Image 1 (cartoon, rainbow, N blue to C red):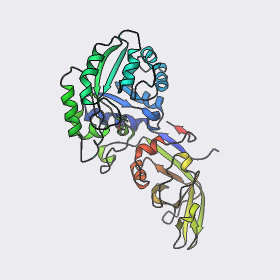
Image 2 (image 1 turned 120 degrees about the vertical axis):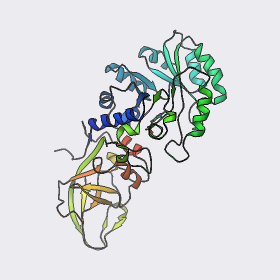
Image 3 (image 1 turned 135 degrees about the horizontal axis):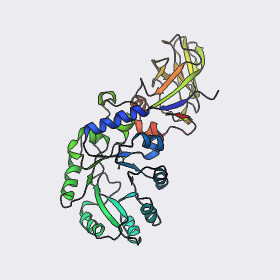
Image 4 (image 1 turned 90 degrees about the horizontal axis):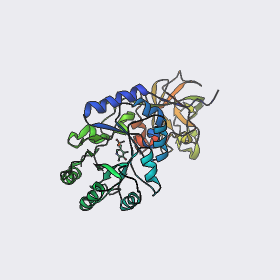
Length: 353
Ligand SMILES: *Cc1c(COP(=O)(O)O)cnc(C)c1O
């Protein structure tokens, strides 16, 4: 037998979440599948999302993998070209590129072919990560519209606080002001904006995290949004032991038993992608019952409290996150967000679908 940890990816849940996107918005859907589809497996996820009009990611090799596997939708490279050599590759595979910088414009100028490329012009409306400043847009648009290599231009921006009370109004207003001058398709909304800001749906929405069944909001659960967990990370107890009062568990002896208690050791650690920063008290399921982690997470193991689970024994099933235990709760306990946990699923964990 191999080590009992595994990730099961529920493609029916993924499809359910895609329908939640469709119910929320009539816009075309650019499903975000970067970072190996947030750790869920690029090809399997893309296969389950065939209805999506577009797929968005970062790495041109992944884009080519999708084309070679027969995906015919729009494929958008969210960071665009990384070098001059990328332009011909994008044209050959009919990949759509974001253009966010003057360096990328120069690489585009160096590309001799005619009408080969669809581009998404990224406008910096306040995120201050990528994109042209609003004042630069008219000149860049002129250049793109008359560019021999460019077939069509979509306007895009990205929100910094769509999930927070501050909202999107400033960025949205700025974007709309600029976009009003052009007959170009628009794309603005990530998951949070899809769910909370219909005025920002534009022509293409760009859902990521909600497809994977996690809430983009700190204060609203995935369940309340009718999102179903897609990744189920499970393992088993590989040891059960009794602690006496005063006994400690794991590295740093950071958990100390106050009474006699039963604990279990789970075959899952930070080398599997479980967050090492998850402190004592992080929720976890054993035999379907909610309990808590104890002490520090090790590379390959972690400890759990079995005080209230007397039937737990070696081989008992453990859910790290997924059905019955939202990844959002585990992320919160570890001081991070679900995105980080899902993307960090380690290659050594076997994945089933
Ligand atoms: C990652 C990403 C998204 C998806 O964001 P979620 O919060 O996961 O929905 C959308 N747009 C861009 C530009 C992104 O980089």
